[in-house]
Amino acid sequence: MPFTLATWNINSVRLRAELVAAFLREEGPDVLCLQECKSPVEKIPRETFEALGYTHMVARGQKGYNGVAILSKRPIAEVSALDHAGLGHARHIAGQLENGVVIHNFYVPAGGDTPDREVNEKFGQKLDYLTDMRDAFHAERPAKSILVGDLNIAPREDDVWSHKQLLRVVSHTPIEVEHLAQAQDAGAWVDVTRQDIPDGNLYSWWSYRSPDWDAADKGRRLDHVWATPDIAGAAHGSRILRNVRGWEKPSDHAPVLATFDL
Image (cartoon, rainbow, N blue to C red):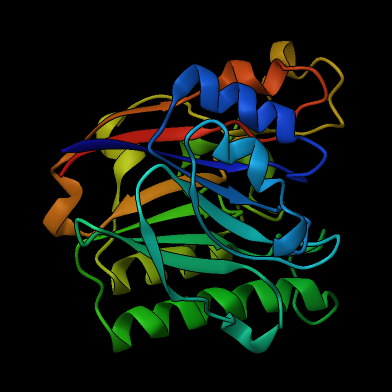
């Protein structure tokens, strides 16, 4: 049976619960993966989502920071919650659907403002996190799996509004792109979004700092949907809902969706 999956950095699930509900009503994905929930698990407004048919959830949370959750119409069982780089952050949750598909939901550290681990601890943490992702995929090659989330890296030149101007800006530096590529290659992950939309500029994030974000269009594709080769061919219909970035009091990220015929 086909199912549609969405990923969205919501930037506070409690503050934007009604936006999540509106999105679920309008799009109705079978599974929604959220990042940066900024809430303990017990304070996630589950009742709001359960009323819309999302009666299953696996999550990791912490007060005011980070946090990941998978909301599902279908039964889902938690299979892991990894703490890469030993940060003690709620940045990963994985659940398995009844059809055997494992969904990994990641929120990779943003990395601060300076792309130099010698002067910026957060940048070093980001690189270490990606290295641990790589090593985990080498140790146990994933199968029948989907990886989604805010990976906080725009890897391709057409994933940013200006490749040349952003080469020294955190999220598009060569060392970050290389670390992400190593993690992707270690799991043989297929970038489903770019499989479906191979050409052209594509963004999922626009800064709050730009008051006219839509016209300026200085975006980056930080949010990703990957799949293992055994199911990547079943994916189709990828899209980024840019219009959601223009909703009232929005997240600075837009939802990314894909459908899998599994």
